[in-house]
Every structure is written in C-alpha cells, then in structure tokens.
Image (cartoon, rainbow over all chains, first blue to last red; front, top):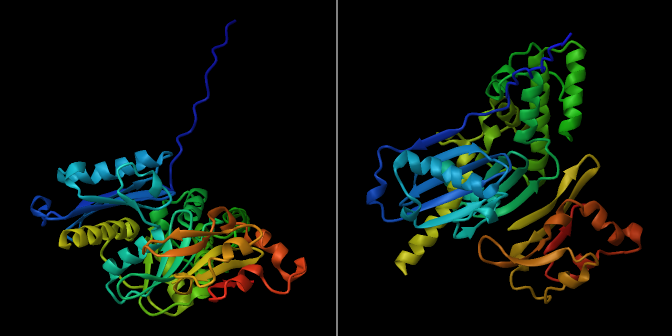
Length: 300
Length: 94
C-alpha cells in the first residue's frame, strides 16, 4: 500500500513586532520652485529613513525597515519618498548619510554621525529650547546634550547590549503576541504597577517575562514590567550626563507611551511634544546639515 | 563637547570621556596616541570639522578589559593616557 506523504504545513506566523512604515509629503509645498533641495538618509540597524528638506524646511520622508543590505535600504527609502512627490535623484542638490550604514549610502556626498544628526533634527522638531535628547534607536541608545543651535555639547551612547532599545521591545511584542503599537497603552491597564524585569539584558528580560507569565501575571502586567525596565535602563544612561530642561525623545520608542510616561515619572520632567514623526530625527538632521552646507556654498 | 566612549553592562559603567574643547589644538603633541599601550586613541575629524581624539570603535565595547592593565591592579599609580594628556581632556569613569 502506498501511503501518501503529506508535508506538514508551517502555521502562519504573525509578525507582532512589525511597526508601521510611513511615507509623507507636504502637499502644500511645491519642490519644483525650491532653490535648494537636500536629503538625509539614516540607515539604522532596524529602520531606514529618507528625509527631503526643501529650502531648509521639512518636505517629505519615508520610514521603512532596514533590510540586510545597507545600500539597498538607502536606495529604497529614498525611492519611496521620491515616488510620492515625483522627484528624481538628480533634482536633489546634496545628500548626507547617517546612522550605522552611513558609509554605505551610495549616492551620499557626506557622512555625519547619528549623534550630531539627532541633535540637529531634535532642534528643528522641538525648537531651540531642546537641551537634552534621548534617542532610543533600534539597537542602541544615546543621551545627548546640545546648545540652542542643535550642536552637540555632551553625548553618551550604549550600543553594547539591546536592553533599552527598540529591538528589545520587538522581542517582547513577539513573546506576548501583541502588536507592538499596542504595548504602550496596554502597559497602563494594570491594577498595581509591577517591579521592573531585568534592565541589563533583553535575553534575561525575556526569560524573566516568561517566568512571570507562568507565575500568573497577566500579559499587560508583564508588558508594564518590561516598559518599566526599559525606562530605568535609559534613565540610568541619561543620569550619567545629567538631564537639563528641554527634554526631547527621538527614535521609535518615543511612540510608546508606556515607556515615555515611565521615563518622565522617573526623571520628574515632561518630554517635549512634536507633530513630526520621532523616527525621522536623524535623517532630518542629516538633511539640515546638507542644507547648511549648500546655503553656505551659495552665499560664498 | 564632552564625548563619552564606552558602555554600561551588568558589571558596571566603563566610559572614557574626552573634552574636545581641550583636545582641539592639543598642546601635548597628541601624546595620548603613543601613551596608550593598546593604542586605542585615534585622531579624527569630527562632525563639526574639528580634529580631535576618539576611542577606536572596537575598543569602545571592551574598555573594561582593554584598560585593565593600566589600572592600579596592573601596577600603575596613574593612567598613562591621563598623565600624557596635559590639557586634561581625558577622564575615566571607573
């Protein structure tokens, strides 16, 4: 008798960690009448952004997940926003690359570190009152002080471990099987605020979270414990350089109120608000650096 | 600008701070470059077009081990990099 072999079908895997990719263009502006068009490309470890700045003002951006190839990620990010507004690469006067993949942006004229770019971007987004910036990136975390012009005066970076980074939040999102955008709001839906899980290692935090679930914690309570751990982690980083009024958060985690509110509570100050996507701060700063360079060149 | 290079992990905080305002126009002839037995210092042009010292990227993640030999347990009474930097731009957090 011939038995029919049926290959097991893999169950559909939902990607709970997948955050919303985003493209935006300011329809009220016409780039064709602009004198200087610059672009900032931030190729990060998790996400890539392309930002277009027209005559020194934000015009459009594209934020998407970084692939396994930095030049392709940069190209795709830029193509996304150019397609939206009908622009071509030759229309852009200057391109600045930033982020981990900054040296691999094939069409960039210059590379600038993400520390300087985030400070410049935050200065644009939050105004010249911004003094302390916390960038919670995909796989690192930075605490930055800047002056009224957005020039860095002090910085500290932690890229040795994933605790306190966006990737850590993605791991917990997958573990809890809850979409990443829901983690923040759900972390407040607890009767008692739990103690934080491990704040020094995402792997330890994950195994601790599993233990808490087995011990009878609700998912919301475990998420709250993780958000608290993230907050404690980045606050310890911030405290090393000190926190001045004019506190601004950039990066994807700035969209997670569960972490932001807990950071504010620990620091005793409120983070400044912005209507601009916090994830584009680095690329925006890069584009603004490009604009300054071009404007100086034009004036000379 | 105070540039902090290093990390914090479960065992502690390991940062080397460089005050770039004191580092620009170094009056010690960039002595840090040769003073460090691990040659961790390097001169770069930073984002504001200033020539300053920084810690080489691979060393930023291994400072606790890289600097261990120069600490008191290694027989030193003062750190060679700090002693060599007469403008006083270099500090260790541990």
